Image 1 (tube, one colour):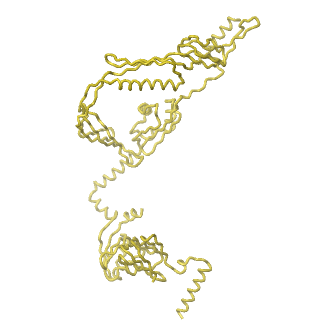
Image 2 (tube, helix red, strand yellow; image 1 turned 135 degrees about the vertical axis):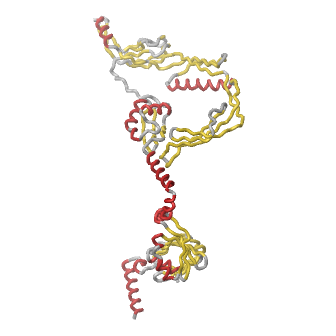
Length: 408
Length: 95
């Protein structure tokens, strides 16, 4: 900071020699002229730094002490400005740069999203574009609180979101929930429990309502398993009317799942030839410049290493630079080996099984077959599982009143 | 007569310093020397530089002279209030 202050004021490196340079220094010091970096050079001379204002006051001290002073070097802005006057375009360039940098601070030049796993960044970017928020938009377009609300409404899986504008960066932080939060239906609403899948009832424990099936019964999708209509009998054993409840039960169903996946028999393997090309990538706003341009070159793998220019940590600018590496390859048609096929398809089936297990499904039998067709490998799997069922379906009141009417 | 007066005034000052616990550098104008290791020294309350070479710096204080000896001695800054000497200081003498 002191250095900067000295630079703006301007200072000189001087050499002092003669009868009594020490006395010269003492006189300067007593008249509040700051000297620094005092160095003995030679037998009778000293070199030191002195402020520009101080230099104009030392003439009497020089005479008094019988010394001589020579300027060795000049430093600081007062000596720099005359040079700048000669290079007015340079000065204009600096001013223009500052104006441009100031102008860029009013816009968003980078959008960063963190915490999204289920929601893809592309989905989020597309949603932001719908809201007129994209790279290069004005900061005033982004209404932080409204955008937070809009994200939560658009993606129900998002439980918490934070939108921040830091410098020229829009930072969206998201937290997702494993289970989507749903508002619980009113417990008192009269409802039946129906089967959500075909299968055989494995076990049923009813807490509320009338069970319509028992363990071992075969049911089809949509069949009522537990009815919320509880009949009230008179002394003669006749139904006089129905009382309505929200049916509640733990029902486990033995049912089947089918899974199919496929992959091609062969693929194009990239055998590197060893030839590599490099091109420099530049992007100014939306315009891209690549020197030399190898994009039309066939049979090349491209590795892009691109960075955005930052003036400060959070101050991104609309300039990008980088290097694109093109490695040439020979395309070789290759068939997948059995191990590769079993690994690839095994991964898919594993994902399917994991997704069912997360829902609490218990597996009883698994039948997995991998067959080779003319064009592709085919995986077909049948699973016998036990899963919890019982979909709540509200009872229609009209239907109920008709039934009650018939009974009366 | 003058010497007697000086002696009396210095005795009075000494008495004030001891009774009121006032720092000596304020009343007597003693030099304050802060030495960091053997690489730098910060000096306050002095009158001026008497001699300055790269291995020897002699400073005039109010009551005594202070002599720094060493190698590559160098004055970082020199103002009316304080000064800083850096280099490899081997000895400090009060003359």
